[in-house]
Length: 181
Image (cartoon, rainbow, N blue to C red; front, top):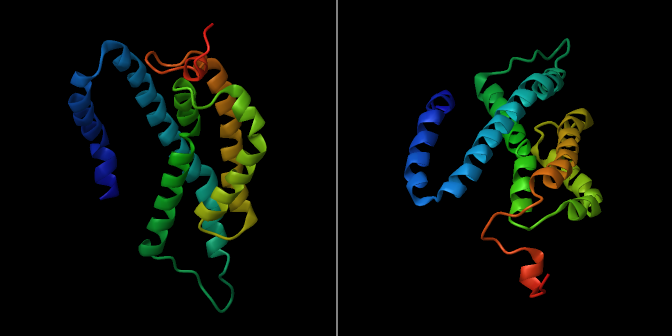
């Protein structure tokens, strides 16, 4: 079922785009297409990162319980949910810069806000890593929290570079407070 969703994904997204596109203005389409492309690449990159760098240590940790009296014999019912959970978690986590740029474009965050709240972001990264990692060991939690913190830092630069001007039609901070420039 998962493989069929992955293979059918482009067709599903094309159908969604064909449904949504007629209701969008030209400038909205121009903004939306790069977001879709970049977010797709980030999701795939996150899943690949989880597969190549995080999944092997997590699986070794689970297999590490075997000894002379106990032989690890993982079944597909245990292997597949672990792999799928890691792939989806890392795919979603790697969307952080795209989300932050979007929030910056609509005026909810800016570079100063992200820099000021960096310590809270690091704390949240470790809490999320503790919740999402399937194993209780520190190594796997660090393998998830580390990329979250690095992606947050990338988000600061991405917001500073790409979200300098908000989307047209969204009020800026000055317009919301009623100040004239």
